[in-house]
Length: 308
Figure 1 (tube, rainbow, N blue to C red):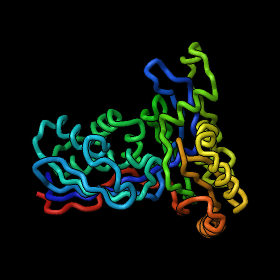
Figure 2: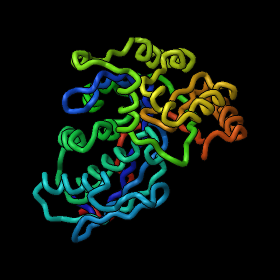
Figure 3: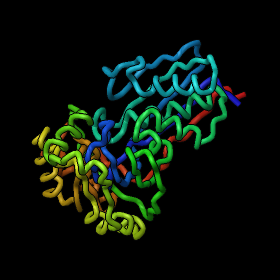
Figure 4: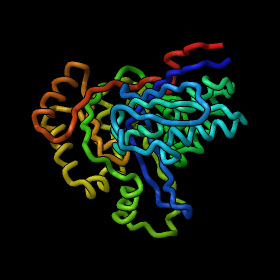
């Protein structure tokens, strides 16, 4: 089955817990993390075309639209894997902050894989798409699955995490992103780990899993943590002001999301989230203050046009 046009939506993420190990010989750091997908989305519309092209709307209109973009690489990888010569005109509408620690580019790639699979009728299963996703980037497999999951290895080896209830978050979004490699380099510098520590694997405590299973945001607030937070603050000192503003606004807890600079603050419920957001807007510590919920589903087809 194929279509003339397919619309797919994929979510951004927050890292509820993130532990980082010393860099390996290949330069990558082993991670242990718990992801939660949240209701801030990337939308990809793929239309039949002779070649692969990309148009970007919303955030990130200055991003590359060639092979420098993860969405284009995703389409090219799927085309090569499927052995097809089909093309796709991709239109990407971005809501997730660019270089904001919420894996917006990974969501673009996941949405593109699913959209082009449906557009071209390549018939790959979710497991095969997940394998391609892991080739594209560490966070891409999670953007496919969504909900809540533990990530190990480079964050791409996923185990579903049982989660009850809905969680309400306030996101403090900055105008300027942070480079993930730069944050990891800063973490290396601050931790000064010797090469003989390189086999050390990071471990997660059970608190975050118990909190999600219990469905209580008050308990989850005590379990949040991010090893990269200090490095992100060292590179962007004003993030300390954002975290302090969230605390003053009455958030249950706040942390830098992933490699930053987006700060995620946890609220008790919807009305509390709107109250915290209002106070944080008045504090003028971020370019935007948004409210989102999680967990939400991963990449999913929203619409087929001209299916045959």
